[in-house]
Length: 384
Image (cartoon, rainbow, N blue to C red):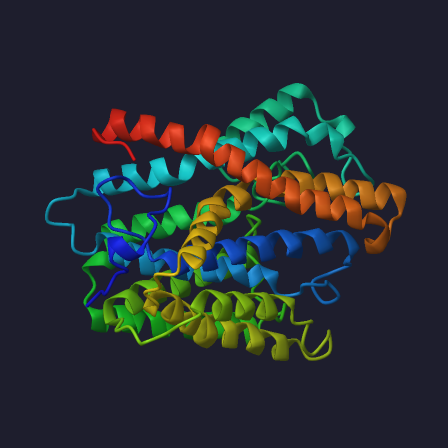
């Protein structure tokens, strides 16, 4: 049985329609913390030769945390509504919730594309027509195959790399609406166990020693991305069905600190013992992330400061995730072109993080919320 945070103890998230249930306030905050760690993880891509020597080394695991949160919230918000809600209505609601920022991310990516030139990718050779086609493809969430994407580094969405996880998020939503929601708790448990076994094989015995995959249309990436989704999303859904809250305090700070530490842990085992890092990834995804979700969902805080921080972090989390990466490309090009160290580039890095948070909030209030209200009224007969 679900025990939500009562409305009187929760500041509703901007993500909610007026007829949806109150959000778990602390989970919103933890999602925001994870989004900020993603920005920091991407910053250090400019100074890494591979995932093995990258700082903030395990920031990619935030995607698995997002998938798990998505499954948990999906089960809470929708599992008991299918007698009155159609598949079409559910998918429409998810489209309204997610797609406006997908489009915005593509537009921002296109707007700054010609400022990102460096030796790793020569943007000057890309015609305006090609950029326009790429923008349209990204906005429609159509994957670009290797060799046919304009940046030339094999990304599924070369204007805004993180869009790849939205591709898998949509797949998860469709699978939930058509099949997974109908599974009994026992069948769902079997799916989670099988997916965990598959993900473990990929992470521990695979050629990479990590699960930092899913961003490219290659066999390895599509397999790894699918396994990440097929474990974390159903695991979150399963957790929502069996959840019984504990008496927890301080879960925003405990969970947030845990996410930061787990993301920042250096690569384990190096290139000689890849399996060790794969084992660490599995420890985080299979054991620690469910524990963090459990803690965050259990707390029923009335502290106004904690609630307001959680609301702010939750509100900006998705916009931040979707707008920051075009500026990472720009930052990467600046670092490479000027041959900068992180210390030398720190003012730019700090400006990128702070500026991305501000831009995320501006996009939320000036674009995302108004568009979702408009689409909600037009397509569902209701607004936020």
